[in-house]
Structures are given as C-alpha cells and as structure tokens.
Length: 216
View 1 (cartoon, one colour):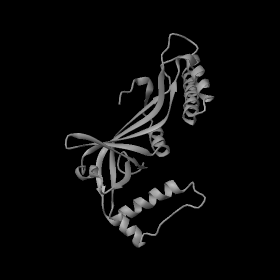
View 2: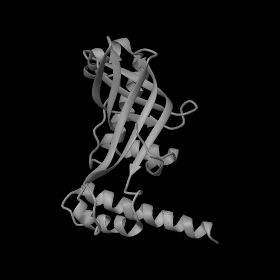
View 3: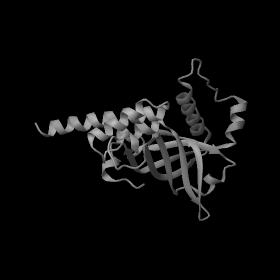
View 4: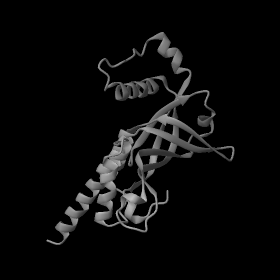
C-alpha cells in the first residue's frame, strides 16, 4: 500500500482496533496466476503467535481456498472514508481528495477442517456479531443441522506476518485548513463523513498535545 510517512499508522493497537470495528474484509490471493478475492468477515486474535492471527471461514464450493495452504495472502480492511471538496479548505488553489482509514494484513493461509476447531470458530463468530442483538442467536454443536452445514464450509487462520496502516486525515495540510475541512464533514448527512471529521479533529488535538509536550 502506498503510504507517505505523514499518513502511516504503525500503532498495533490502532491497527487491530480498526480490524475489530470494521471486520468485513477482502481476502486477496493468487490462483493459477490470476488474482482472486472473497468478501468475508474476519476475526482477529491479537495474542496468537508473535504477530496475531486472523480467523474466518468460506464456502467449501469457493475454489479460492483449495490452492492456498501455506501460501501468503492479503486481507484488506476499510474503515470510514469521505470525499473532501476543495471548497471546504478556505484557501486556494486546492483539489478534491478522499480521506480514509485502511489496514492491509499479510500472512500465511492455513485451512482449518477439524470439526472441533471449526465449531469453536463458528461460535466465536456468532458471539461477536450476535452480541449487540437483544436476544442473541446461538447454536448447539451437536445439532444435526449444524453438523450438516459444517461439511459445506472451510475454516482458516491467517498467521500474520505484517500489518500496514494508512490514516489519511489531511496531515499534509495546515491546522487551520484541516479544521475547516473537518467542520464541513461534521455537518454532512453521512456517518462516514462525520467519523472522518471527528478523527481529523482528534488527530489534530493529539499532535498539538505532543508538540506542546516536546517543547516543555
């Protein structure tokens, strides 16, 4: 991922936090010398191995998994994003741009086909996504219907080797210009735009605080 120094995010807690909040990923790999991709929810285990694991499952009918054992793959996670109009900056000349958060995860793909491990993965997945529901759905591992469905999926882990993060929040502009753009984002009728506006202002406050600390 092209990441100028001013946009680079290296804090592992921040990177894992975005993965947990925006866990619907694009899993990219090569198959027969072609690029293939699947759109999948992925869980993260921060404590597994030296750098963490991603965990997920896909349909057994999906051919992507068949050639992936012990191969390197890329999982792409996208956070909030928003268009930035040049009219918002209050100075000129300026051009349109897009502000966003993204994390790229590189790692080794390992299939999980053992029933016990696969059931545990499915229970973790259900627990994560059902927890906000007033009456969370769950399943019994010995349910014949569940056992039948197990034969139709393949679980997997991705042993993380590298994380790349990009927090593009206008850091290449002055404090005043960024504040002007952020204030315009906050009044847009778009939750992503509002999130980016808040992130821009929070990043400014953090940087100002660090600068004050450095000059003491």
